Every structure is written in C-alpha cells, then in structure tokens.
Amino acid sequence: MADPTVLAVLSSSPWRSVQDLVADAKKRPREIAYSSSGSYGASHVPMNMFTQAAGIELQHVPYRGGGPALTALIGNQVATLASAPGPLAPHIAAGTVRVLASWAGARTPELADVPTFRELGYGDVEFYIWSGFFAPRATPSAAINVLREATRKAANTPEFKTAMDKMETPIAYLDADEFQKFWDKDAKRLIAGVRNIGKVQ
Image 1 (cartoon, one colour):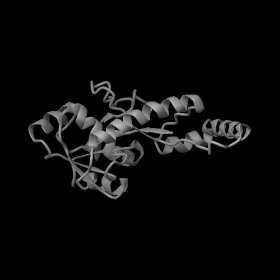
Image 2: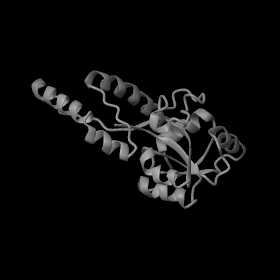
Image 3: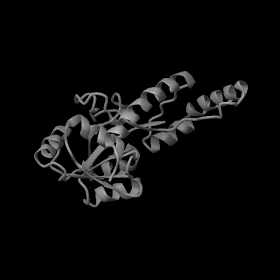
C-alpha cells in the first residue's frame, strides 16, 4: 500500500490551484498556516518539501496526530493540510474540502483530476505513506519465500482490493527487489526533507 499524500484546502478558500496558494504565500510569508500530525511527521515532511521547492514560507502548526490536524482544517483553524486521501474522502464528497495537488510520482485513478507536484514543475517533490512487510535478516530463505508468496496472493485477492478501495488506498505491491529500489529512492528523498527542516524550535 502506498498512499500518495495530497494537499487539501477548504472549498471556501480563495485558492483554486497550487499556483494561487503560492502566489498568495509569497505576498505574506508565514501568515498562511498549515496543520500537521507533528514535527517531522507524515504531514510535516511533505509540506516542507513543497514549501522549499516553491520558495514560500507557511506557518507550521503541529498537532498530536492526523485526526486533530484534519479537525483543525475542517474547523478553519488552519488554511491547508497535507494528508492521505482516505481521511479526506468524506469531506471531499461533502464539498467541504478541495484537493489542489498530489505528492505522487504520477496521477492515480483515485486522483485522476488532481495534478502532481512533479507535473506542476516542483522537481522531486514526492511523498508516500506506505506499508511494507519486513522480517529479521536471519530468517531462513525458505520461510521468506513462503511469506513473499502469501503476501503477493493476499494483495491480489478481491477481498483485499475491495477493502482498500473503500478506504481509497491504492495498492502498490512490490516484490523484494522492486521494494528495495523504492526504499532506497524514498529514503534519499526523506533524508533530504528532514535535513531541510532542520531543528524544530
């Protein structure tokens, strides 16, 4: 599973696009606030990647988890938020929230109308909330093969696909070699992202 994080604003906001948000933020640095699940968390790091690439400064307001961060957006306590698509789905359906862009590497069927930051010219601004299956290094190869095959089969069952569709979570199954390549590339991006944040005061 790999949720491509998305940039959300209230539907009542004046920003219809990322370009609108960036233009406004450049006029008034640190006046536009965004919530996150906490410093260095899964909504803080991607937002910082975006602001660094766009050359803007937003006001970071950390909360104790994704739920409170989303509540802050819905309650109009902050102006924007980076989030997985699933928690936003009911608010998008209700017309409360608008999605401006995605941190995915390419558009997904679930977000077909949402441009990626890469499309918008923001370089390697890419971020996923993903799940992987790990085992201790000393695990026998025969056991690893059994686990890999069982995981592959489970990820392709109609039941699993239906469950993920209900949560609006795309399935991105990668076997060991492909997952290692993804891991290496993603780790490189995340290390750079955290270093760009620096020490949080």
